[in-house]
Length: 152
Image (cartoon, rainbow, N blue to C red):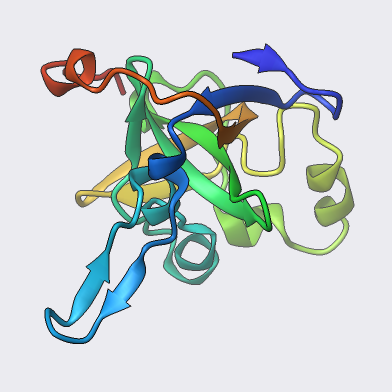
């Protein structure tokens, strides 16, 4: 990963297929060709219920996508960590966006979602920043991640 020009965000180049939106197939009644990074978009779920969609795996960690930028399909994501391994005081989306704290949360150098509690597989986890911007790049090897357990 490399630093990008804005704030503390990092940039990672990944296979464009991981960022693909896919398309709806009426015959099979499902989305086909959707990339795992795109599929992990969860900002709407976090704001509504603190739950997340299935995260994606990248360089030994699980990540949750919180925004998708068009037309380049770049996705911004935060690392997912189990709540008991988070150093700090986790907060809910509601607490983070309450009143006067919203502007300070938006200017947090570790990112707006840093320290936010989310629910995955029925357990509390925390999103940790700084965020990473995933952009289309060269295809990455897939086999090395097949047997990786990942760290929360």
